[in-house]
Image (cartoon, rainbow, N blue to C red; front, side):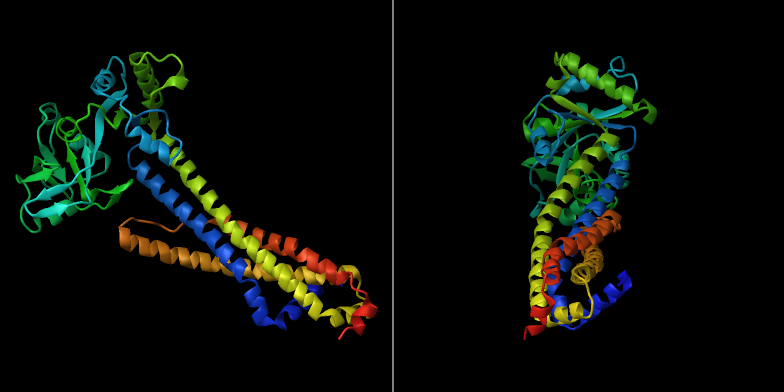
Length: 415
């Protein structure tokens, strides 16, 4: 009996109980659907992050306090590290220390509430940074007004640039330029309003408020350290050399001889992309392992149903053996039935996974204004097919062996 005959007989055997066959593969369908969705969403998020980080420019270097972060919790710990202060900024700004430097700005993250009159704005991102640098990095255009300058930073001017949503919520249709808004009890004069831009990198810049970093430290945070420093090389080809100069300058300043004792981290765009990729990949693997539990349950369900099927078809097995079918023929027939069941469940799961992911990403675009794009997870699709066949093989072998071991005489006597 050839393979084609075995497949044909397996399909006939499954067709007798269509409803039971459909319910049997439900666990596999759910599991494979979840695997495809996890991998698809992971790849879509990775694609979005890569595109956003690429927009920062290949010549961009980010210096953060604390050791190099390797996970989400490490990113949070850097916000409280105080190893980057004005003396570090001054040393890095010195062309004698970093000759390839074109531009540098510190950044201060501010938590607080923004209000104007009786209107409050609680969704804002308050950042202390040089306005021109931020606008250039994120491709922001001013709808009205002008950006503040380095001289405003040096004089600790209480000025602010605001995003379109901030202006809309605080001022409505009224003009914002020249008006003073309240940030954590301190008055800041609006000098510019950005054009609507939407999501850039990790936040929606329409909700951003940018103030001079020195003003953020003096009036809002009460600290004397920066959350990060962003530098740009004159050309992308000089980035690696600039990273070495920055690292050397900070180690000399902090009297560090052993690199393992670094109290700062220097990351290029390539390094940031790699780091984020590792984090997204780790979450994807973790979620996939959780999803694997449903596949295991589905496999056990298939094995149970196949054992029931073997018992119900005992007389059929005896008749086939009486007509010359070997133990191998019987084993392969039932094994093929299990594989066909799981493969059908895998294919159904792949289709559903793609459809659900498309629907979910479309809903996310409308709900968050984030430009999620669907990325077809080829690895996820291949994994879905391979796992489906493997489950059919692993959980189908025991029922198939039980069927092949039945004595033809005893099988024919069964009622």
